[in-house]
Length: 125
Image (cartoon, rainbow, N blue to C red):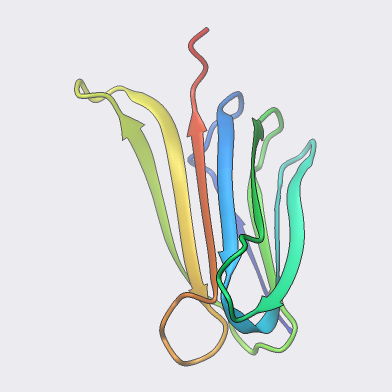
């Protein structure tokens, strides 16, 4: 079984999270987004149709150590492309942070087997 844990270190506690996760794979894929205080979603799916999404939702990030676990029991290796970014004003101030991950569960290199996008916006307070 292949498994991978990815830290979403760029997203800051207190930000309002919005996420979208989906899969399109012949293998069963489990993804879990969590921090020190809660689990945002923990879903498994085995489906070659990208719709409906595996999970989508929103919540405040109140813990620490936001992380993504990916497990694929039938796979030998998980390959993932990661992109961390800041949401910047025209003046360059960060008003939030984002994370996108797409990945592959075997060797066909289409990188559409799993996908997660998380955006965190800072509070206006």
